[in-house]
Amino acid sequence: MNQSDTICAISTAQGMGAIAVIRLAGPQAFAICDQIFLPARKGKKIAEQAGNTVHFGRINDGEKDLDEVLLTVFKAPHSFTGDDVVEIACHGAPYIQQQLLQLLTQQGARLAQPGEFTQRAFLNGKMDLSQAEAVADLIAARSEAARRVALQQMRGGFSSALLQLRERLLWFISLVELELDFSEEDVEFANRDELAALVNELEAHLQRLVQSFSLGNVIKNGIPVAIVGHTNAGKSTLLNALLNEERAIVSDIHGTTRDAIEDSINLGGISFRFIDTAGIRSTADQIENMGIALTYNKVKQAAIVLLLVDVNDPEDKIHEAVSDIRQKTDPQRQQLLVVVNKTDLSDPETLKTKFSKAAFSELSGSDNIVAISAKHRHNLDQLTSELLKSVDLQAIDNDEIIVTNARHHEALSQALISLQRVKEGLQNGISGDFLAQDIREVLHHIGSITGQISTDEILGNIFKNFCIGK
Image (tube, rainbow, N blue to C red):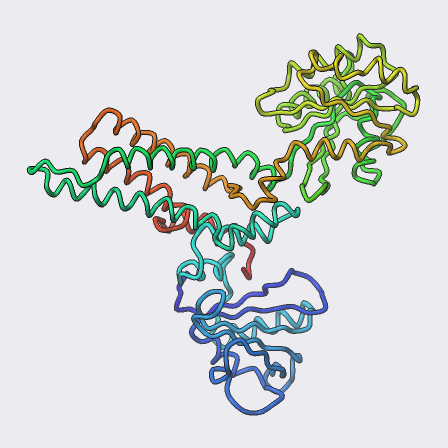
């Protein structure tokens, strides 16, 4: 990607709409527009216009007018990329968009690569690498929580915290390396007790960031929720009720669902990915058994397991289902929620005695029990409330830093390992040169997140996944 080129691309979504925006950035952006843009009010050329101004006029293709447009001028360095930038708002017909792109390329621009505008913003110092990645996360946000976390990172909340960590370590490593210059005089510039206190503080901070990834990952990608239970417990009915559409086939015939059906829904600003699975039972049907094996596989992948039981089933059958699923879940990383269905076919007294929290607590390892009627959509609000309890909404509400990017999580994990080596080195009294090397590793891993330390391969990997025009 050559920064001396002038690049162009459609920045709005592909297809037909009321308007489309075509972005042009680079040293020749203004000169190219002057060749094809005829302003309604004759006067200055584009390069002579003030920045952050909008101009109405026509796009001229030789002897004919292509479209009436609004042309917005951004002058370097006060633009998204840091270059001279023009954004042309034209009518949204795909033909007009393509003709306008063709005109721009004929005048010397080239089509932008995916993410090239944002990459230029990074290379021109308009944002760091973690902020650039947050741009892609904001575009792809599927829930309110994902939007808020991405926006916070794009505004530099995450970068600022990392910069503070890095600056404090840089101060100490400069003192440690100064000691190496006076090694023959046996002097100590870096107070080891102060460095140990700083390392303990940074270790706790890095651990919080690393641990936040489990929350950040589900915020970004949605929380996988497996709906499991015996045949005819009402799993497909519950999925349809939650999605408010007939997504899965519902039938009184046992074993109707033989494959996993997935769909997502936004609840309370959080995206949940519900997975309706094949009913669990003993059967000689080979295809159905394959579906049951897939059910157990989906249970392993889920963050939340909704075990649906029929209120009218015998107690031993219900307890067998709870015990079976409990053995296949990991309480350290998964939550089990017992959902008693078909309450419309039972009386309150049966629910109180047969499904008391005390009776299920020891068996399931959890007192999370909700009684519903999926068919009549009764008590689904309580079920939603229980699902939302699985997410640390307070951390989001308090704008705490939450790591959502796998690359950041890996770099922070490596920084934490290196920092723990620094801690061990201080405890064992290792020499300053070895101590400095371990601190440099911490600085390297933290710097790789914000792009203070980067390679062309890393940059190419990150920006190739952006949409064209951004």
